[in-house]
Length: 222
Image (cartoon, rainbow, N blue to C red; front, side, top):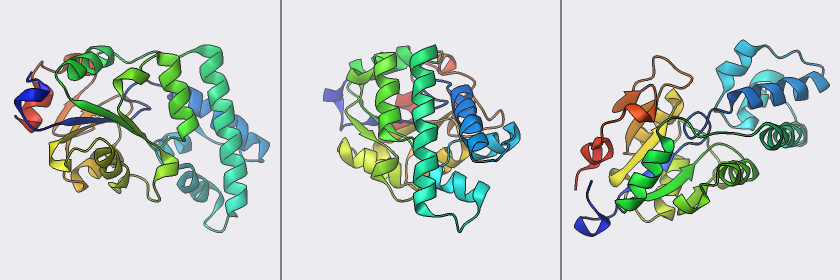
């Protein structure tokens, strides 16, 4: 892998849930409890169908397009607070291969950023729990964008924040909407099949531990 001095800068833009870690169970439990408090019996299938979307999109899908913004904010805040409680109570762990690639990319001079649909407080809680904050040069979260994936806005903003052109960015994602967003933003994409067995991308693997050592280099070049 080349060093940063050998070529123009390159960046790895990381989705968080399902990519750095698998916290789907905590999201499921938090949503189920919160929606039960709203009188809605949420099914696991309905939860899975919405996973990775912005909370406002999720709640409009469940409650209807005419749900009040104040209601969306109240329910969303309650759900995310419960999610962070679960993270603190039960702990989290990096998915296979993530630690290796975070370090390998840093040593090779790649800039790295979080590009997540999650609220910033969740991102900060996860990075602190996993002790991986030093690897990232920027964070882009739900509050920073107006449009969720597959719109490329979150990736384009993350690229801007690390001062790397989209064509020299590799997105790491676990969801079809994220892969589509990367492509729509003019970036290459590595897919991790954590939650979508049929996920397709420029490179797709079951875990990042399966990636060949030149995987990122091959997608971008020097």
